Amino acid sequence: MARRLSAPYQMDPISSLALWARRLAIFSLVATIVSVLIVRFGFLDFRPALTTFFGALALACLSILVCFAAFASIWHLGTRGMTLVLFALFLDALILAYPAFLALQYERLPPIHDITTDPIDPPRFDALARLRQADGANSESYAGLYSAELQRKAYPNIEPILLDLPTQRAYELALRLVNRRKWLIIDERPPVPPQRIGRIEAVARTAVMGLREDVSIRVTSDDDGSRVDIRSSSRYFSHDFGSNAARIAKFSDDLNDAADNAKPEKKILEPVQPVQPKGAKRR
Image 1 (cartoon, rainbow, N blue to C red):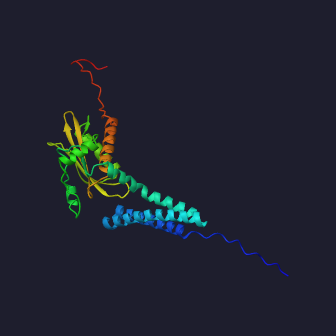
Image 2 (cartoon, rainbow, N blue to C red; image 1 turned 135 degrees about the vertical axis):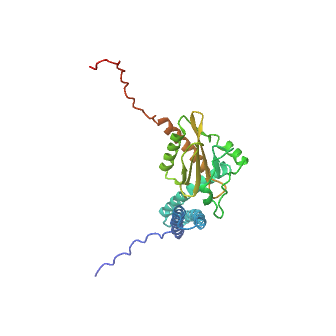
Image 3 (cartoon, rainbow, N blue to C red; image 1 turned 60 degrees about the vertical axis):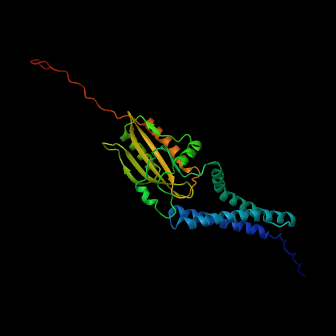
């Protein structure tokens, strides 16, 4: 008579809450990536993409709540799924880390979006003004003295760049830095007589979402050297979370370093031939 095999070992069931926590976290991650790609590459208007982005953040928060509920269920009922809960929490933290940083910046920094090294006479937007006429875009005009006072208190290091270089050389260095950053150049005008004012207008992008921020650079003569003024302004929204000031500060540091490392052009001097007296024979 054949011996009957015992029933296989039955494992504890997986918590349904843990499964839902993971599903919500994965869906939130996918929605976040898709919304960022839409904004960066301009597949659609950025407003629906931002709505999707904030919806993804809400799902990530919901996933965290479900994770806590799943943890309580696993603790009391002895079901499996702790690995799923930890994985979901990792994804949620990954999604919410950058928005949490922006929230801190929003509370810490003033609600301004237009930063310049010359608040009295800021570099103007000429070619960029046409791009800022879209519906909902910020005005191309500078915000005024109130914004300048807020900027002075929050970013005291934003100052004009004074270089011991000719205007043309300073313009070339600034243009090289703009190209190195891969900003989209809209207009460039080198300094030519009689005014000798160089201008560069370009479009930069924010680090993560890729939102457009317009940059205007003005190069003028200053005694024996040159002066470079920069203006960086967000095209949309009234708060830039410090991105424009950080851009100007980094550009100023790089331009000063480039000017310090710029080697003066060496002129090859031909040796002076001695003057032979008349009637003297050459040896």
